[in-house]
Image (cartoon, rainbow, N blue to C red; front, side, top):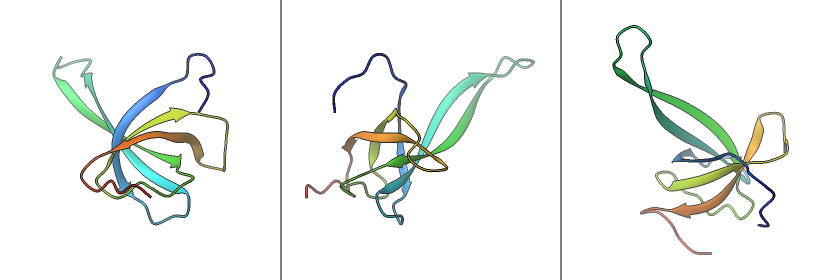
Length: 88
């Protein structure tokens, strides 16, 4: 994939691969609570485009923001690594 300027990149865990050419990636981040100054774990799920269907549940996936592909899909899978990774 050719690089097109600065684009947001996130890393998360694949939690669903039931859709065709789409995976659901769970991204966790730590934020500081405004009142208690304690770090809180925040989770967000992103739908990402996976054109070769290589992602499996439990894989670590790096995703990058892209143009809208469908109603809820605005991310693309760039790299996959993890215990369930099978080259194909």
